[in-house]
Image 1 (cartoon, one colour):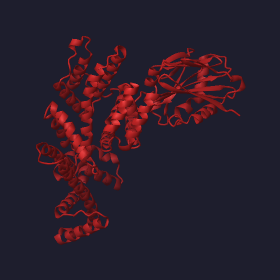
Image 2 (cartoon, rainbow, N blue to C red):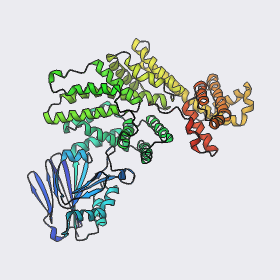
Image 3 (tube, rainbow, N blue to C red):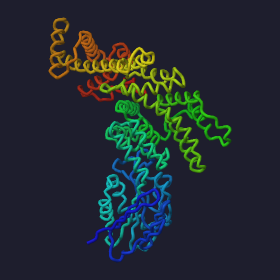
Length: 610
């Protein structure tokens, strides 16, 4: 027995699927096809698919999966289980986010608008054919009560399980005499872009040159505008399994803060920590910035006037839009330098204003291109954005080297860094050091080995440029530091364990030498052949003595007196890494069963944008 029917076709920029469930012998004829359209109809309901969009009339609505970064009703934001957007024909949200129904259930939508306001790749419409003869708005309320919870929470949409989706819809509707029509639209170009970027990003959380070229070919073939590209990229980056938990935690903290109309200091500190963690895990900062923009909506910004660097940014970019073409001068190197420095300032201040100006600019460029078929503005703006992409690449690479232990810095990495520096040097020879090196080396969270690695890279670049070193030389030197960093960590772990039992004997050089040899044998047995030098062992030993002094003498006093100055003085003069100290402090609080809030007032080092 036939349970459902389905049709598949292609028209304009989309593929469409029509699913019909609850069909009886009385519903044999329910569609007609014309050269440029397909019409579905049943008992006062009508849905027409054309090469430009769709026209609908009757009882039903539309739904799609929420993309990351789209504005949601606050009720949907507060519930993690809500994954999908549902809009009923003839209904809208008023200012208090209450749904208001009308009898005007007829409308039309273009594909451009559908895939811009809904999901970028796939969207659904539906209507329900029945013998109901009352007001449309009353029927719409009945339908929403029956299937609303299911449609907003189901993961069948994300998983493309269309048969299960239709079965679930019919099951929740519980109307045996009704017929359900579901229409699925897939944007062919956006789908190809989304799949390709997803596959490439999933491998290394970055794209290579050949992969970038492949993506550019898709963009050119389907003329995908930049705003839509960014929507899909952000959604893909958010859904990466390494990124999503951290970003979701960040979102939950923001929601907790705005629900109380104020942010406690602890909340702000956690947000800063998550941003730092995001950098260490190579999570794009745009994911956090997008949540800030959506949830905070400017809340907490005390200064009404725009900072000077944003005024300058807006002024330079608005020069692209003079109506008199003779006034549209090319943006010169000096302007690019100002924009790069403005980006750096905004980044260091966690200021979303700069990215918002860029987003406004690309939207305006897209609008001009569509209206006038003039792509010169987009081309010029894209040439500017190329410098911002170079900035992001350099920031990401140097931050990974500075804050992560097991990052491989290859000759290709160094070659890429040299290539980017060369482009910045064309603008100004001091720009690279001013924008990238200085703030990174001054960051409170950079480790001792991280500082050595960054300094080695900066010196290596100069040596390569002068012909005094090769790419291989610099990479080899950096590998030595990385290997020493790993060995130092292993020796510290082993020595710390032994110090718990042999601490009195360690005052004697003979005892220290015996333990050093014992640790070396242990590491060799584990396949680590690196030599434990006297210098390294002495450094680790002294660091552990400092650690012991801090944990047993200074930290109890600091917590009791809330003496931030004493803590900062120790961190700044001990040579121990701030990340490591904070880890020890948290262990101290946990081991003694103390409330974690007792340690939050002494955390001062956070807040840097790395």
